[in-house]
Length: 472
Image (cartoon, rainbow, N blue to C red; front, side):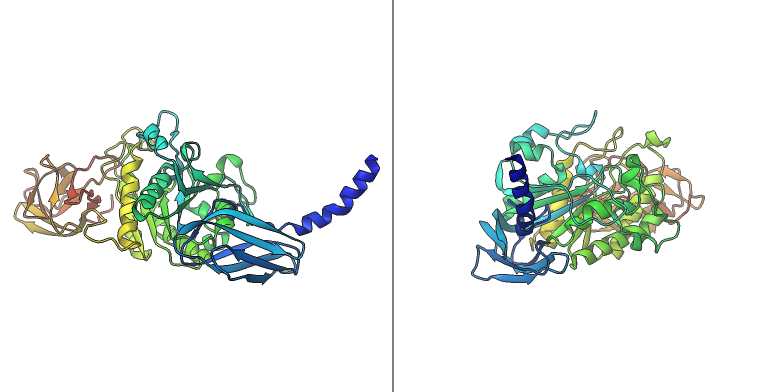
């Protein structure tokens, strides 16, 4: 009898496998598809077979042919936000159905630990108001997909992960920034929202770029082997294993929080970060908006630096300069929400809001407010003081009545001294120090750690800056 059963299983197994239409992890039950868009679906079926796709929101049947290796892809038009829907996929050998599919807004979250960190926090590094946020996570139309950590020297076609409906259990372990952004978007737009996190703590920008892209830059070496303990800093391996498998899944835009792993070489980052963004957009074949986060203030004493040193100030300056080479981008300031003793500041709520404001203004057409904080525009020497003007502060700049912190001023000797700053008019700041009777340059929060308190009238904090270009 055992022999008969075994013979039967061996005979029917190839037929069962052939009948199975295989889909990548990111295309599954509970997913959100970008609304009113031509979205891409892909998978595997029997070689050379016809694959039929029937979404329940319309009467259109889509038919594509798998290639000789069984791979297929199709483009279908999604309806306006709504659901739930079903999608039936079939070939000559069988069919499968995707259930509880929504049409709405889809965002990708990338980067390292400050993006990846969940409401569980890290050792001695909690996320503020974690319990309150977890309890306020029961949103059936908010869906979460987290790409699980993986690495590979060769490109992979699939990743590990699954779509989950937002509730306390799924939200607890998802990106805190991604969840908070998605919840605000869902509440404001009143549409389904899908958030995809593809991040790994401590990862370098080079890990998220292809081998071909990186070889254009001097000094990059692609290893033949991967040390599992250093996978997050190994060039290309996260790109191959985590990003490529989800590339092409239609998104509205991308949120990105990364850079701490690259702070010792800002000049290289100035070239490679815009190249990474360009490559991601090429992968998706879309010029999606890209909003990223300026590194938060932190003491960096773990690297033997002082909070008053300026190593990371130069890196933040590079992050801001990258805006010029990344079209349709925005930078969320963190000047007032850093932490002296942890590289993972607890306040993810304020940061998520600032990313959300950028999206509201640049992607969803909201008006009547500034989405960016005061940005240095120009300086003018006025006797023993320097007057500074700012963009993105049309109705005023303020410190809430407190003394303005973080300004320094220098003369021709290039020695910076703490300075007094006061606001004149709506949006002009005058900077002065008795120690510098003939000033020529000003710096604002140009150190590793600081706590800024200069805002526009919309409550958005000013970006750090310097008026000089002196090498130190």
